[in-house]
Length: 488
Ligand code: NDP
Image (cartoon, rainbow, N blue to C red):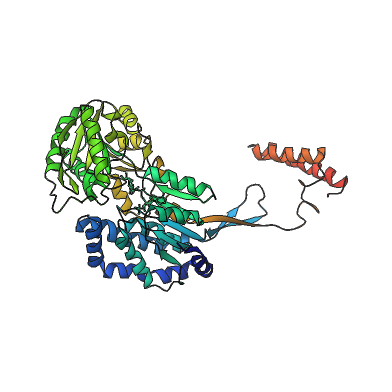
């Protein structure tokens, strides 16, 4: 495969010369292009990925429009130079510039084949980078929408390139050494990608999904909460990094909640509501997790059977010992949710934090103060009180990403945009301040050391009298120092 990077680097060198405002102006037509062809694009995603039209319109096109709109409106402010006043040398001036990485490689997933790349490609371009996108081999036509809408923009040739291919193409693109890598996918591939990037090293952002949990307190609106759980665990056929995979329900309402949920899961219409399996290999994961649950003697109050080659019925798994089961510990990435019960808030928090990943979480209760206390102890990148955590993806100002096995780095929000560049500090001072040379330069002597000690103690002192005392000491040491050996 010939490398796309030389051409991308030439385009990037020109692109980076433009102001952020000019980059915004040139990318802006892409938003309207997406809106104008919404139905056609949604249909394409629906056919290729298998998600319902409603989800293609909302989670792919709608989310992409809101992400792009917010980025275009806020990028000039977020990426502008920042002036800093300095605490140690107040007489100096400093500013932090945001410098593009150069060429960013985005390796995309198949579950949200347009929305996820949009949230990484557009900020990377606005920050002054060129981008090479390697979508999943399962969904190249959906990712191709991005190439089409950017194709109508006035961008230097080679600034954005889409390279189709399977995992080996992704690996080759990493070996060819981009300047930054953004990866969304499985923990296993994330590890491989990170190891490959470490050889150069290339900075990486990893979004690796999770086994996200919903905590249901005894005072929650159970009808509302069961609907949230039914939707949150099954939309896009459950193939969502922030899908609700675990339910932690207060023991006193567990039976009522479970029967409401079973009823709702059974009423999901597989023809219009339930997404299809996109990656055929998912079926083996579902079968393995269900076999593990059965081997452990867990109950499957509903679901657990395939409705066709590409659909698993919405499935609930429950019972003692579920916390050790695969459905609890590992991402099923299907319409499967595991349920257990808690007795007090500390127990709920411990159950939540009993897994290695932490992307989103949710707490359902009428007591917001209690929910805030619980949220503050959850190991998760985003916590929603009284809504499904995945909903937060649709709000572009919120930094999106997780901890632990969910990866690191952020897309969305200021953090996501800043992740597309590195900070360069430019500081300026004058020659001749503090005497002819800097007082900490050679030659070292005890007056100089006393000066630095007084300076340090002065910084530590809170009382004005102490500060003044240290300043006088520093002044005396400086005078003694300057009157002795000349500075080097
Ligand atoms: P992968 O992690 O294998 O795929 C994600 C992306 O990485 C795809 O574009 C894939 O290409 C590419 N890729 C695969 N191998 C390499 C490699 N060695 N170097 C560079 N790129 C590579 O996901 P799977 O399709 O195997 O899904 C398995 C599980 O991953 C799911 O069950 C789910 O748990 C999780 N997942 C999480 C997602 C999230 O949103 N965080 C998204 C997708 C999956 P290609 O597809 O062409 O092989």
